[in-house]
Length: 196
Image (tube, rainbow, N blue to C red):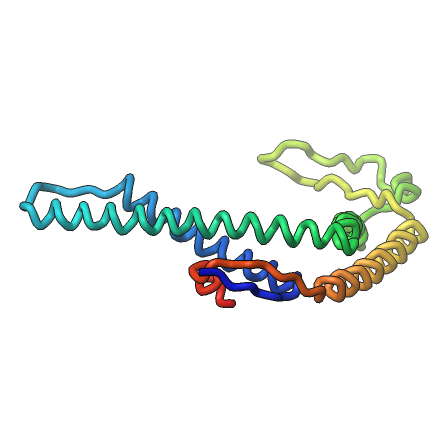
């Protein structure tokens, strides 16, 4: 039997995650049972019966996992089509770009430290200061050079703040669009596994 489920796009994402988790766990256990079972000796027909029952049980569970996987693919296909239709796919691409840019800017800005020496200050270092490159007997450390001047860092900081603000706004817009309802038909078995 099947039932029609009407959920928001964001809820369908959660359903797919839930089903994927169950699929992964079941497949892992089935592979273990069907390929890693060991015995130390033959102990009789009862042992054979239990092993055959285990084969029947785990091949049945594996078939169920494959049915779940079929439903996961259908959910993802439907959600993907709907995302493209309402513009979420394009927003997600932009959101990914902003997150990557934010990561780079954060790393650069936060890597600036007080122990760095500005390029213009290098000439003030004593002539006899030489960093010892020997890993076993390092007397003087190499000097960290501040490649960016204060205005450069401030510019990157402002860009970081703008990127972060745009990413927050975009995340809100994506969440709002993911409230769109979508109907899908699921078998009772899949609906039960998904909790819908």
